[in-house]
Image (cartoon, rainbow, N blue to C red; front, side, top):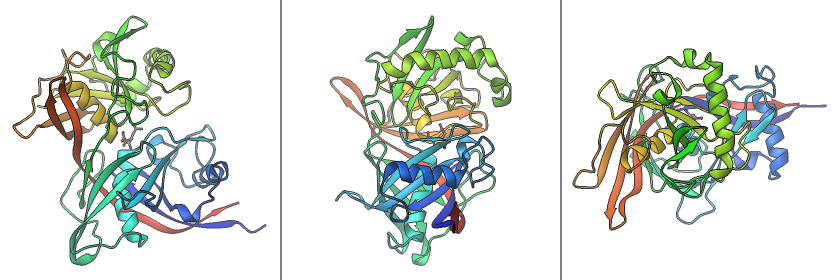
Length: 358
Ligand code: NQM
């Protein structure tokens, strides 16, 4: 039988990489669509029979369409193809893959490029929230060349400005889904936060490590990984995520004092392997833990205060550099409120064409 041919583009989005589809080229039926994505990426741990890169950061999919909402230009659904498990997870959003969504919309003629810069409002279907992207389009043409460097990606490229309008409770429904700023689980204090990504913050020192180990060292620490997983399984239902065995969230973020002039240092399990850097929305959730009172970050992070406009710059250190989140806040009688966040990414079109499914 002839193979099925499906148009696609492949982008590096931030420090991740994935396949980008026009939703109209995929089946409407969700199960059928997911089977196609598994075939596209590869079903086994090496993804030998697909285009995936056999790593969580290179096994990602974006499905894009003209928006169903009057206040957005395009809809973006993120799909994590779980490496080696023959299944997908659409619970979390991905802020790295999001960076390629604006360029895709222009390349696919869903959005017209403007002179200079093109502003695209994205409805992020996974979380139901909005993010405005500003893509560089000199003379009305998209460019990928520029001077912006991001950790985890060699060289420089054109900036994609990402302005999130609301991040709170993206998958768990609230900022502190357990109802507390600190919970104790298996004798360890943790803060469970969803400010764009469900993340569990833990002090590295409470787990008998420094927090400055390399990702390879941490990946080799089976005892640490087992205790993180035991905590995750108990925290999943408390965070309104249900059974999180095999799920992509919550991420487990080990925090320690910053050493490079930042606000906090991190090592993040996403959630079974340690990230070489940190996810975008993962960093945004860590930043919330540094700004808001009475979390486990309170005695680890440098104190940060909003400037006169309510903006707080939080530099989150990670194994390959740092990630700066410009968090917007307002001060209410009830305390400091998080109202949005701005950050910089880059993206690049790597390939476009037709993929074949048996
Ligand atoms: O947190 C890694 C990444 C991500 C996700 C992860 C991401 C985000 O580096 O928004 O970008 O935590 O799985 O792409």
